[in-house]
Structures are given as structure tokens and as C-alpha cells.
Length: 104
Image 1: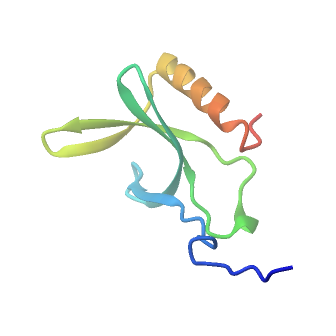
Image 2: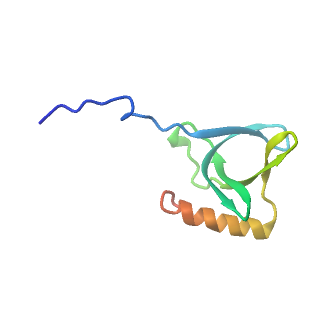
Image 3: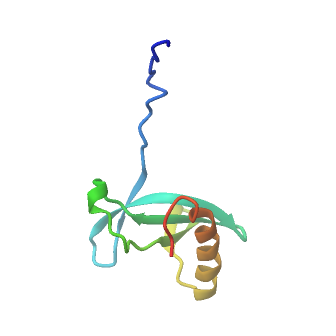
């Protein structure tokens, strides 16, 4: 049996896609982007609050859906607050993410 040589490419570590946002009280919160999709011409991100240590994962972590918009100053993120859009996009993310995460 031949020795298996591991290359840096074979041992690539997972690097989460992180973003730090400020809440309405001015507190900075780091989120991990877990999925993205386009729906009816709008780009959406599914994010959860980031925890560095898996032992600190909260089973009740809430999925936050953000829309990506653009204005003269560039791209911006906005929380989806329209109930109908939230239900539609939430169902799309749920279907896409149910294979990789325990969603229920």
C-alpha cells in the first residue's frame, strides 16, 4: 500500500463567509453566510450568528434573511420584513438547506 501524500489543497480548511453588522442598538454582531439565492430579481443571503467554537452552537439559532440592494453608494444589506416575501424566500432556503442542516 502506497503512502498517501497530503497536499495543502487536499487539507483545505473550511473558511466561513463572515460579515459583521451593526444592530439597531449599535452592537456589532458577526454573521456567517450559509447560503445565497436570487428570487424575482433580488439577491438574498441566509445568515446565522457566527460562533467560533462548535460547542457554543445554539440549537435555536435563528436564520436571518437579508436582501442585497444597490444604490449610488454601492451595495447594502436590508432585513426582509415583508411577510409574504419572507415566507417565499424562507421556504426556498429551507428546501435548499434541509439536506445539510437539521431544520424543523
